[in-house]
Structure formats: C-alpha cells, structure tokens
Image 1 (tube, rainbow, N blue to C red):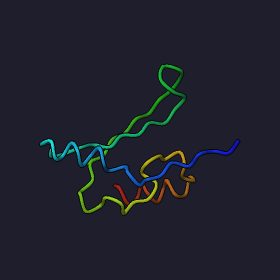
Image 2: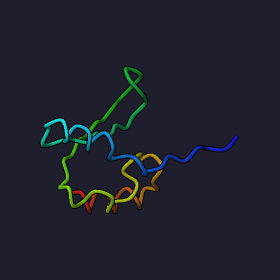
Image 3: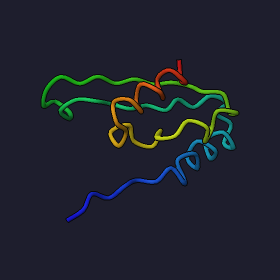
Image 4: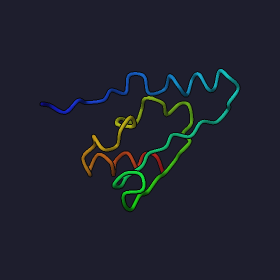
Amino acid sequence: MGIKKRSDWNIYAYERALQQGGFRLVAGADEAGRGACAGPLVAGAVILPACAAGRIGGLADSKLLSPAQREQAYQRIV
C-alpha cells in the first residue's frame, strides 16, 4: 500500500471563499507533534500576502517535505 501524496491544487479555494465572504485576512495553520492530547504539540499560523499564493511549494502539508525543504519554506515565509 503506497502513501497518497496530497496536492496543492485547491489549497487556496477555502481562503478565496472566505475573502469573497468579507474576511480580509485568513491565516493558514499547521501543527507538528504526536496528535491531539497524545503528547507534545506545536502549532503555528501565518498570513502571507496574496502575491505569495502558489509561490511556496509544499504548503498543503509540511509533513510531505524533507527537512531541507521545510527549512527553505521557512526562510521564504519569515
């Protein structure tokens, strides 16, 4: 059984719908840890300018990135 790879193809659809509904800023969030209430958990959120949409690969699921790719994404975000 192979691992399903998630796609970034529609990652911004929900954000666009919220913005069309009047929300000006929408934060994207991600977590890392052992799951809800099962151990240490770290969560983070960020609001990027609209021009950054689609320009930073791997935002759909950071767990699919290698440590080096996560570091590159981090450097582009901050």
